[in-house]
Length: 218
Image (cartoon, rainbow, N blue to C red; front, side, top):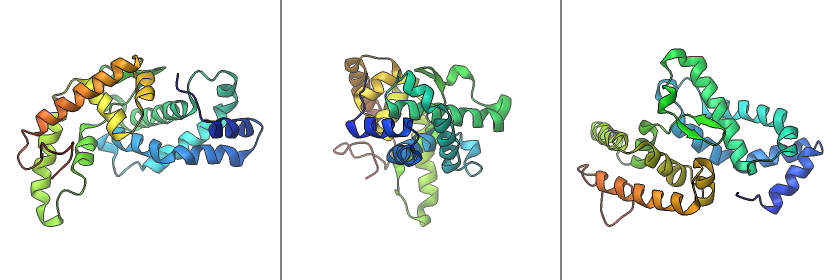
């Protein structure tokens, strides 16, 4: 179990006592991490229709409603609980807007307390490319992104999820292990193996990878 910091514990105590500023401070501390999670898991068909800020606002309201119950039975570290509630809000928006077109449940990765949307290969590829090209090289970027998406889709779903958690969401190993219900050793080994697999397949993408560097464009 990942423990909360003393600062988080103090703010939780104040928020549980009815201090709305403490709850706002708690959410603000983790807003950037939650936004990254939403950005890489938002279904590509909804990009431009749903802003991550809207998902975070919905999640904040749910946190405010559910905090008292959480404090009575804190079965997750606070950030992972926030992440879970935010992921469920994103999943609900997917189902509301896409209905039967939403990803099959079998393609969702089963996490603690239920399944959340998978990290999108489109979003992960965009993250890997970063600011790789100038506007005049848009066609080159589009081709590279397609190749990287295909490479990501060829990976084992759990390996891709470990990469999303560690490399993109920037969760620690202990947090990743808890989310995926793995031992810390297993989570660490899986990440190392997945990172090597990603490097191997990206080396086959012309113009993208320099083997002397980590994942990312030259």
